[in-house]
Length: 293
Length: 324
Image (cartoon, rainbow over all chains, first blue to last red; front, side, top):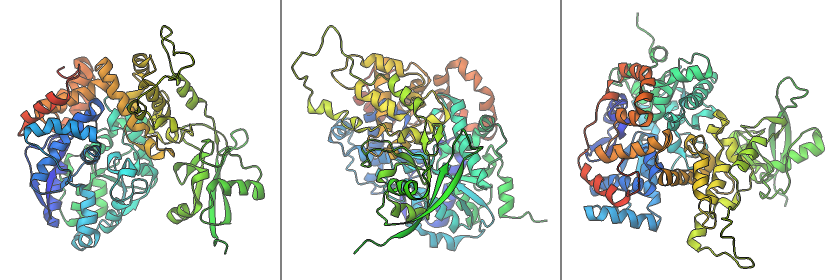
């Protein structure tokens, strides 16, 4: 399949390992990524807070870029997914549509609303399908217990979600199962990582992420995996702060979604950028691939 | 023909803080039709099996908001949650008290903080004494003005949103979704004369601790969508007062970062949000992250077509904060 690749800001900068792993997995599964150097940032929810219509307009511009090439959009971030699909929904409001058109049409941009925005998790589970993925597993993740952590904007508002279930999602766990891993179910898997208030009150953000990691751990998870690089920042890069907040060591490796897929499909840790994590993933890797003497 | 019944196992949270060392879950098994509300089942348990089971309820019609509780870990009204779908999905029905409030006994929680936050937003119309409403005459609003807050008066104060909110869970100072939705209702009412004062008073711990996770919107049994109204309040607060604190500075700084380059400049935004002095406080963590991810301090290349963004901003972002 061909799809417009929307990597988002983090995967192009501090979360480069996510981009690297995505490209590896897509190559392995025959997903052709079409790149557009004129895609802008989705606003990450912050532009939406400052100016709702502006946020819809910048994302309508992004969607129009894909539409001109007749492609749907692939996201690899729960927040990008949320913001781009929010733009699609908000454009159903005639008042917002008129204002957005008023800003875009003078630039020759006319978004007709035909683009579907799909997160990689949806493409893997719906378009590629679990049987096809299962058939390509070279290194089953047997013995690895993984707690999925979805990220808010992939799931909610649940009544506006077009696939899976916002309240009781299972696509990520189904995928983990197909990869040979044991999915861990815990309440926090659909909760917030605290990222949006990292810049407002970092102790509260850390208390929130700490709670989720601790809960995954107490349910037996050896690792967590997330389809959102912002959650990854909270859970991995700021795990030291979370440890302070919950007053105990967590030592929880956190994979990006395509890293856990790539690992099962036979990629090397280097190909997936696993050396770029703040919390080492070695213990989790050792469970998958016993060290050769 | 009577509807066939199913055997439903309930695991009900039981706790009397005055007598019990810790909470426990008690199993009750009932034969019920799938359409039986969880509340009806609990009342049957209380009437036929265990008269000590304590719960709050009143109308049994999803109007009073009294019987909110956690059903299979989700904040729900027990009177409108049917046993069939819960059983199908979870194999049993776990009933627990609402979260983020201390337990008085079994399924009854202390709602004092919830109501305190509600009263603190002064959820009533404030009028200018110099311009009282004309006596005996209705004060008219246009349909468009009413539409702005049509959803919020549906709130039945069941506290499902408060129970679901992770910001409340982590920070008792956060007023919670319901209080902020109520605040919104009056902050956009054209008859209210305290709009500015309302927005001013709710910060800094109010608006900007909202995680926009939408758990409140999912939990609300009445479709109030508090998270979306909190977003509206944030935009109103920025428009009225500018970027006066960390949360609003970050939102406005983010917006301006996209205007200039089309992509986020992480370093520049951090400096803008925290200020130069605050940035120093982040130095240690920053260096820690930089060792693995040196890109955090790199200035990203502007996207192709960044001038289009400038034109879009000129058309849609003319507010007082636009060029800061």
